[in-house]
Amino acid sequence: MPTSSSTRSSAMASKGRPRESPARLPSSLQAARPTLALDVPTGVNATTGEVSTPAIRACTTLMLDLPKRGVLELGARHHTGELFLADIGIPRSVHERLGVSIPGVFSEGPIVRLRR
Image (cartoon, rainbow, N blue to C red; front, side):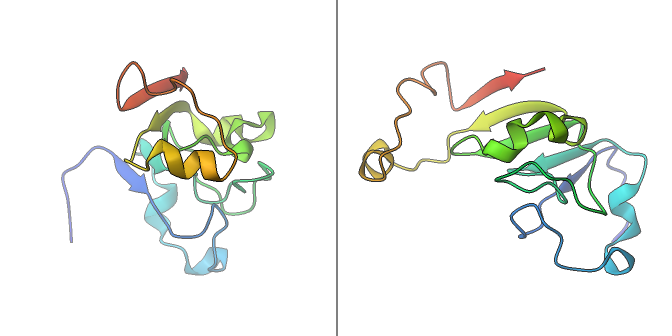
């Protein structure tokens, strides 16, 4: 479906690793328009930051709930762009049961800028 949007999003359910071969990924993913990556840019490993081929070069990445270690790695920086963290409503008690401490991370609002 054609769109007049000047941006696009990368929101593939792949934990950052494309499951398809490069030839099967849509060519629009590498188009010249700015890209918003949701959680982790496609092609960036969420844990290690290793960048595979193909990989999206997002101008902005909106991580969901908690920062992903790989997105914060220096090697992933050219693919993540500006970083934001979004509160998606997971109760603090869930994080506490998992041993994750996030005191006050969303005290300024539901979306926090981590890096320009």
